[in-house]
Image (tube, rainbow, N blue to C red; front, side, top):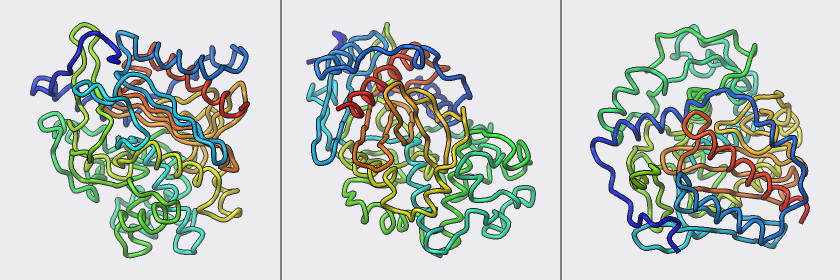
Length: 399
């Protein structure tokens, strides 16, 4: 059924380009905020399957809610798919676990998987510096280490905050960037703080991670993703595109105006301006396989994983996920009222994502809504989404 009575979505208009462009880079930038206290304070019983379905229906019935939502719970070989609303307001079909979608900053976990796999193979070191691996980058950045890039303590200025970058995206959201030159937008800037001294989420970090992986191997980042991540985990529907198009079938993403209705922004913005920081396209099915393998340690040795699982208290993913958050190396720990899962969140125009799993990878959750949420843009919706995510984590962990 249609989630709301306003029917078909409007196509993206030139007058909405600035809003869409601002939304994507505002989301990628993120804002450091305290976690919602209500998440820690409430302790209701674990939700039933009927409760979870009702919560999803209530999400899509909100005036500011997403047209569609899909959650995939997997416990061992058992998979349960929960969904509400539609994948596409034009056709009215329901969301599917094989629909393509933008995973936004969950792509940062993929760059972490590549980098840590190379650390295991001796091609990179966690304490290798930008100066050692990428000597052509600004001298002011040369002491930053791979470890600091992966846990967002590098101090690198965020290219997606530069006015020049924002002006280009505002003028043409589908502009094709040279992804390997994104850091040039902030090449004249110094570090924001001494490397390792504090946490600050930055899209530049994961661009630098991908460039270090390329420099260490002489292979393109896209090739490394295929060889080190997609193939070992059996991912067959995951890609890192350069353009704005999405493969069929896909979950349509929408920008929601409670008064005027939804605007389809699925293909409004080029992925080339996000690249390793947020450009990957996947499906709920593939993302489930990825997070089970990644959080479960299937791609790296125990020795490297012990380094990855050193967490920074209070360091939030963007957007914040369920419960209390701590940052590791390209992985976050989410401590909820029912237990702990590990993963990553993301948002971009049309999509908000969570992918998380237990430390052994045996249980996993992917949670996708087809609109963007952020604490600055729609704090009430984000708070509700986080609460629903926590209920799904409880259902996952308590069976």
